Length: 450
Image 1: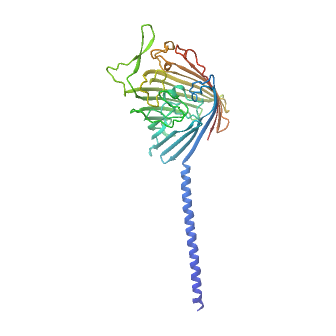
Image 2 (image 1 turned 30 degrees about the horizontal axis):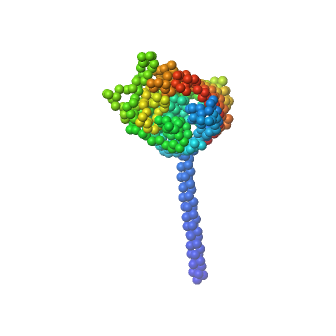
Image 3 (image 1 turned 90 degrees about the horizontal axis):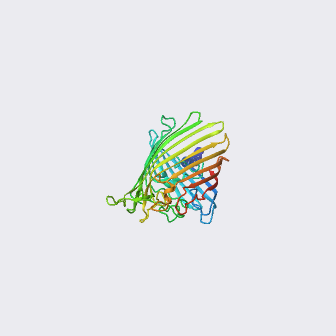
């Protein structure tokens, strides 16, 4: 009888214990699910890399309102300025055989989109890829070199004239074998692009010009004609096993253009009866130029040699461009917006290039830089031909630049740059260019990179 009376209490105790066990199991399951969710989120964050840099600088020019390619023209009544040249934040998400990149640029002149593209890599050899979106133009060495790594403040004058703002919207296929493969060091890129480049508020072409880029408030650019431009680049860069010598060579080709807006086209030069060089308007009886392709055809070669020795790392690097460029009589920049209906177009043969000599002092944090560059927009004429008449205007003037600099890599994230760029123009008979303009620029920059 006692056993029968005790049995209900035993069953009740077992029931309570079972409920506690169930609650514990449920609690453990919830914790496990939370853990798995956190783990998944953490794995996603591991694939996301955030990087960036700020370039804060002070500049001093020889004269008030100096026009330049070292960050944009100075205001009319100023010859010195503080500015944020670049303020970049870059987000890179790396997935399985894929990549997504978003890069923003924030300065006192505004915020603009610098890069946004997606990249897919073949799952077998991991050597072939396709990249679609706003990306670096696959042309030359300097265009593709990050501004955070460059030894001088800006890209060359001719790079900014021919390929403004480095990036463009399009699709590109690439071949780049992985490390350890026989062809490691080889990289081939080829693609089609809009050709108009990217917009950067506050720098570049002043308001009122044919290609009005650089006007504060410009947020973006769209293609303005039916033509697409081809760009291709092949390069081979190698480092010796002891990592003391690095060398390489590359070749580039650009084939594209934009639509003529009228039939006023000048593509040849002759000597008149008194010995002056004059532009000759194209014959429109047999050909209509309006809406036809105004050519932009470039060829480029690049080279690099670097060696480590007792005195430090010595690097010599250079590029040479040549080809055909269509522009106005006063400006040879590649247009980034529709040329005006009244502008005549001039088809020129050009050449341009630069050479760097870079010396890292021993194993120290100090670096000396010398850069010489030139841009000759028309190889068929000389300074004595430029009189301001018959199309012989400032768009034909040759420029040479010589820059000397000192860089100190103070900390892992901090670099200071001191660079003086001496700019020389041809002395001509054109009003305003009868002497060498005073437009040398001193740049003192602090860069923080993370």
